Amino acid sequence: MAHKYYTSGNFEPVNRAFLFGDAVKVSFFIRNGQLILAEECYFFLMASMRKMRMNIPLDYTFDFFRELIVQQVVEQGVMNAVVHFMAYRDADDHPLPKSGTSFYFEVQEVDDVLALKPEIELDMIREISVNTNLLSNIRVHCPENVYAEIYARENDLDDVILLNPQKRMARTRLGNLLLLHNNVIRVPKQSEGAFISPLMESFITFVHKNNLAEIEQEEMIAFETQKADEILMISDEKGVFPVGKIRNKTFGYSRFSEMTDLWKATLLV
Image (cartoon, rainbow, N blue to C red; front, side, top):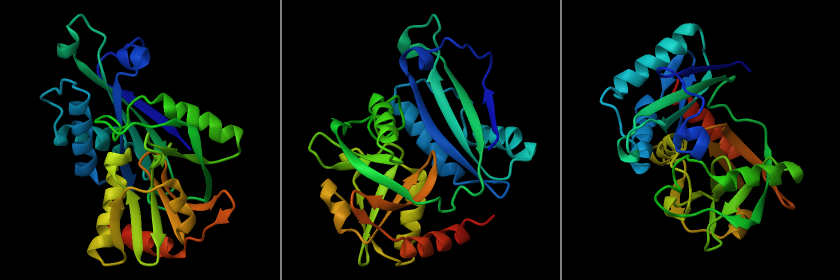
């Protein structure tokens, strides 16, 4: 997979993102040579910056980012990719509330951002938990994610399920879980520590509008995964993955496969 990157202005390697993790991340998606879900991703970026109390420059408009990504990515011949975008606070001489803002993004070419990836194996981790506050739903520096990635690799897992302080299911290291049982898809609430995800919101909105299943966002204990018929993990960073195994239970993904195929067809451009 090819990687390319782009920065705003004169990039300073010693910056607050590097020093303090003072940054927010979102993903933009290129599919068949077109920018998809652009407005949803842009508004998520603006909301994330506001939550981190960053100054938002007046030129950070939707048109600015759309044209930037089209010029720097699409017009360079990239057909399918995830654009990993990071906005961060400058390490300048201004008081922190008035510091400037810069950005960096990396382009990761993929086959199809909406295609089902290979099955993954999960387990839960109990040594650490993720919070449920204002910043828990956006992609910011999170040492719990670093710990979880190491734990997963040491235990031959693809990802791990993270719980909140109430011992209920929040999310995985990379994304959100959708549990299908009979005709109901259950998703942890954002107030439980789940990520805000434009990609997942697009999928569940499509499923709801087309009456493919009922959608329930609720509080769930981790054991609920063992009752599911199928489980899907949607990550704005990595894509869409069927969960094949959690502990000793294995899962199919035929219904989720059908739903994602129909969803992809609506986003053909």
